[in-house]
Amino acid sequence: MPETSVITHLSEDEVRRRLRPAEVIDAIEKAFRNRLPTVTIAPRQHLPLAHGVLLIMSCYDPSRPALGVKFATVRTHAAPPEARVHATYLLLDPETSAPRLSIAANYLTALRTAATSAVATKYLARENVSTLGIFGTGALARTHLAVLPLVRRFDRILVCGREAHSTAAFATKMSAELERPILAADSRTLAAESDVLCTCTTSPTPLFDARDLRPGTHLNLVGAFQPHTREADTLTIQRARVVVDTYSGAQTEAGDILIPIQEGAISTGHTISDLHQLVSGKKQGRLDPEDITIFKSVGCALEDLVTAELLIPAC
Image (cartoon, rainbow, N blue to C red):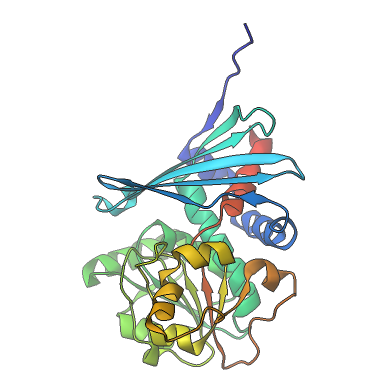
């Protein structure tokens, strides 16, 4: 009988210790520039569950070769909120599909999402930004707070959650963790005063009024991943130059874009670029300092694969 191989498993704590945010940003930027055109990414599967949805994301890169798949359960309601998502990533043998490495992937998912937002911010945000604003108080908000300052210098950081008292507690906790002042704000203040604004929530409806946004703002919309949910209103999308992570994902899952199309407010050609075209210089994002730019992300399996690959030498 064939010898049974032992599968190495990395815990959340091990992943958190071993992944370096700057390296993840660099790997994701290079992957969207060089690898996206040649990889095979299956359409993300959404399997409805009694308590939420199971997402299955797979990616194969024949040039390495490399093969991986992520299983992520997103619960409709969870207490505490950080229990809402549970993810596991498997790096597989590209010849046999036998598992090579099992990875607890909650932090991996949050970090690769923030790193992708950082790549988009690097190419789309103005150089002279000063205020970062984050909607949300969960795992995605935490990683965006830690990672976005790696690509732009911010003198001021604002956060806004559902409730004032929990937002204040989150701001205090993150100020201590990141060793810099982070202030709680209401939604209108955050929208009006942020130069870079990130939406990292579970809200199915818009978080702010487009009329509060200043010219020149860059937005990363990362929380909504279903065609009937959105974090930005129609006017925000109408006003902006919109870049997506992938066209295929945006066309099936990005409610922030699909709902305005269904309303007749924008055309299917409103999106100006995907992330590959942006970072490879094939398309231009910001044309003017007063442009409002948006990066709409629903998540791409290539992001998971290249982040997981960074863990291989550590095993």
